[in-house]
Length: 224
Image 1 (tube, rainbow, N blue to C red):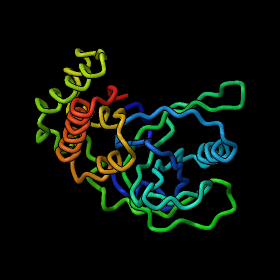
Image 2: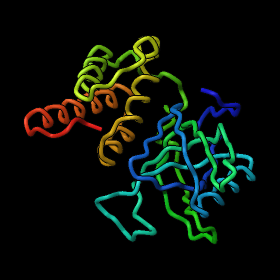
Image 3: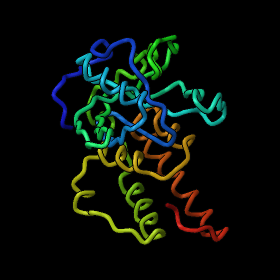
């Protein structure tokens, strides 16, 4: 995980962070998420995060079950704090970022602020285990996970870097596959909120198997 700051526990994170609502965007601890930032409010958010020195942004999904307004969707209660670990300007007004996940958080309240981007008071303490790398990965059914991945790749005529997959620790493998998965926001939120890595892997396997079975029985096009 290319990150210079050291986060040992919830006390190392600020109590208030800017949040970036993005449907289908799943960031997990120690996962890496590329972002293409172009909206003025989020360009300002990045500027402020860099200026503050903490370089932290909370990734969170809008809740499709409670849509709110188009400009201000209702948010899920759980997101993930990410640190800006790569930053580049494009020359045409955009920023290209990479966020590295630190820990999940629960929204305590959304604040009334003068900024165009949204800010929330957060509680990280329910997810103190996120600060321990590779926690619980020995409980993951790696064989079942790879079987689901193989079936997914075959159904979509895709190839994979199997050497990289075989060398990846269970935590990195589960989280990377969850983040890259093509599933709906609710399914991704379930993976985010999973109490442990084993459960996250089980949700990913189950969702993949359901999608593949539906595709076979209903003649749906391959998963994208």
